[in-house]
Length: 235
Image (cartoon, rainbow, N blue to C red; front, side):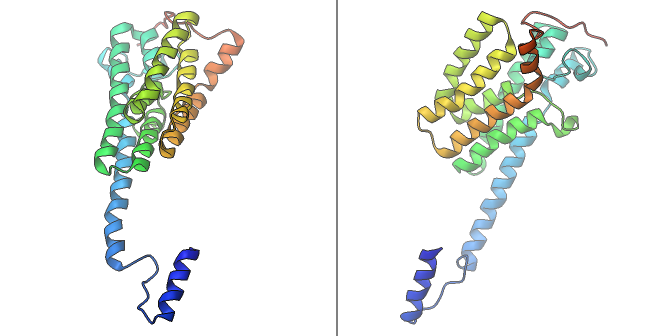
């Protein structure tokens, strides 16, 4: 701001024409499409993330509303407990793919690193608070993995090993997911990724933690379900 005022003062003294605040009209006109593209990219990422994969897969396998079964979540863990492995795998793959696709859309739309990072967060927000389910949804783990795999692949891959190790040792999906989610921003920070990427990974980790509040409470009480414990579906 001070630099801009100084430049204007110099121009006055030299009797040069002053540029209008905000640049020339043609400059503002050029920026306008970029802003529109950024907004559309983030909105598109949200809508892709909001596709309720687990809900749709469960309906295809005969359960009309997965949110009325088990934990009430639409993620792969609840689908596994309610319907078994095949629907759970389809849900998991679908959620990962939509997270990856959402960030890809943002990247193709603008190529701006801040917009791409915001698109990653928007995809996870869409998964957790889906407009198609009355702003209910999943817990952001699989969709977040897909989004982070596209945004920051190198810090994300070690988080997979963390997930596997904790899940195999303690048999708690929620605990493994929390640990893996927290590893990604730490890895991004350690690798000195661009600031938008670090902020995005931290936001996604924060969303995952918030969506696991009840799981954290059950873990502390010792009542959290372990991997392999199934819920009886009520059709």
